[in-house]
Length: 468
Image (tube, rainbow, N blue to C red):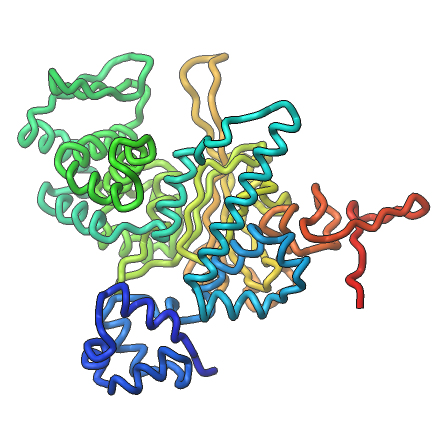
């Protein structure tokens, strides 16, 4: 086992907990000078200290590993692709920056993203598609980042939902009656089910929750649980949303709804019971949907949130995409990176799922940095009503690092140790490092194209060899 130097992360943990070096050293049963040496990478992080850190502060051991920088490195590569190529910085340079000075790396990342946004707006203005130069990022994009930063797990919210589930007697087959009784007895809310244009509507003056007949039992339960979260834990939702967004702003309102939805999923699928069920069936999604009577997407999303300290499930990445490659949901408890520009990789199996709706597709995929993942993907369709009425179809992807794949039923029969069977994918064509990929749809950022009228190749965008 190699030595682990994690001074920057150790110092960040101490500062976040508002501890002095002497106070943390006392908790870890080491001397302040020894802690100081570890924070400055003069000494490695030892196994006994690592164990005390995880037990005392509830952090995953992976927090101190190089894997924890994977996201930050990938984000830097995307946001500063041109600048990095021009400066000739190597992958090792980025890795050292992310590991030793993560705060500086985050500042550079923010500058790079603002520069990208400015370039996009200038291009739009040049094309005659000018937009307000002060136009902020989409509030929905801000909410996706809100959950992404928290690795799709809200600890206090999850605990509160589980406590409420235990209090009111939530269990398989008993969800709807328990939620209905709680809304009526505690909040005086009456249910009304009928045909309507909306799927649900809460009328506050009459305290009536209207539900559409088009909602299946599992969907009704989710709507009831969401309304219960808003009524019973509204103050907590406001407080958590206000950590990132100004109260009264569109982003704050959306964050509040998003947190309420998270609460609802944690209420109808209480953590400990659902975690035990998932482990029992080896994360067989269809068996879990049958057991709990909920939809495929709801179960997949809940699986991606099982990251409670000391009771973690498989750390998943979760995505929802349409046929055009638009990613409407993306959350991750892993280092898997989702591109903000240039779309996603056409070799990713989430797109294969549209060819055979209802079937679960399995893929071992390898990113350019050598990290391999096991991905499952399935297309799901939703219809508004009768014949001829428009509906919507999405592919739902759920993936984990290959080191966790043996815990999934979908890994049976696959060669998880070999690399030859892995499909090489990337973050998106514009920022992908696989220069020889024949599927590339756009020239790579930060590379000069090799343009030759007398020669053609199978690779659509040849690049110049680096000088020297």
